[in-house]
Image (cartoon, rainbow, N blue to C red; front, side):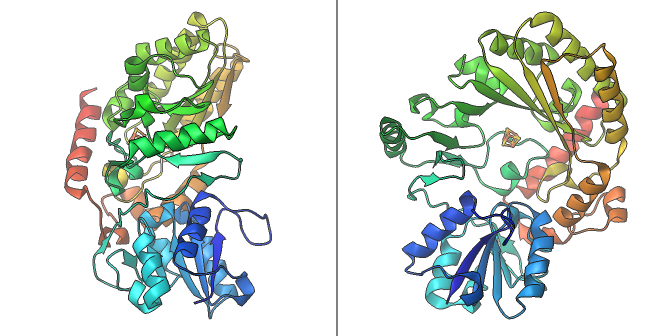
Length: 409
Ligand code: SF4
């Protein structure tokens, strides 16, 4: 085999570089005794994809290199259908076993593995959960070293594929993790922890502090003021009603109080919010206006960024089969007008807008492998249901619960 590694986030010829998954893949290939080859000399192309929207990139690659084997992996692999259409196989979930088999026994053997999605096959596909905890710290594009602390997430928010497609696990050897972090810091290196919520790990209190972090409001209530200067809060729904429905209940009082407290201690805060969750109404956006007004009244100093992402259904998640509607765009537009009209305005608040409905729909079509009409109707899990996601029974119950909470509120 003569393998080249590509990163769909760094398309060939447009930009040099590679992301974390591709760097990890290079390490994995090397430990299996294989060299990397330049793309023109390779017979096999290993592509890391962060999302099913990279299917368009795979399609172009296939058109350009019809005779090379194309194998897809990375975070996008847990929605394999669209990525599989123009590739030879998608390695679903973690890839240690896949790479080892590919290097030692060849592509045909790798395509028989339980986590190999091959377009047109009918067999069930597993999500490989075999994370290589023994890998060395990997230096990312920004120069900082990334240390893996955990995978999956105990807090199963109803929209979050990370939590529903991966089983929860944490670093099995905290002593060596802490030691590695200490040594890197002593050598003057920058480090970041890779985890969906570092505070949920049993060894969290032992980790040396770092400059950036993502936290939950629940974490801050439990552990107090974090060391990081920039605090990212996964708030999710634009109202307390929606936050309760997705499974991350944060009251308006707690959100405003926590943010104001962080600002008072010199921290910059950014909320990550999802626009367009199923069942969202204009009243939810009115609630957000109220929260912003209160934050302004309570917080004389400090900045707040609000990043909106448009909800997009992801396979395995409880609410993936609920109908897509575009009302969020009107709600966001009215919210933005209110904000800039003067009542809501503050030069200490920065708004980052969500995707427009057209690009959100394209993303949803690729994620679910379904056309627009079926996504608007809802109810169909799409061709990715061939994947044996680890919590599918719980997902059905969580969807019922989501609807019940919305109806009650
Ligand atoms: S959104 Fe964050 S807290 Fe919620 S399940 Fe996903 S990773 Fe966990």
